[in-house]
Image (cartoon, one colour):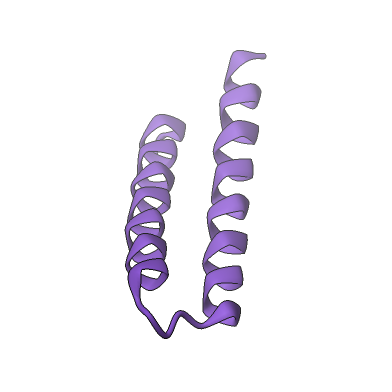
Length: 58
C-alpha cells in the first residue's frame, strides 16, 4: 500500500468515526466512556495522518 493510499484509508476511518460519534452524541442516553473512546481513536488517526503527511514532505 502506498503512503497516499494509507492516508486515504485513515482519513476514511476518521470520517466513519466522526459519523459514529455524531450518532452517539445525538442519542439521549449517550455513554460518556463511548464518546471519550471515539474521540481518542479519532485523535490517534488524525495524528497518524499528520505524521505521514509530514514524513512524505521531507
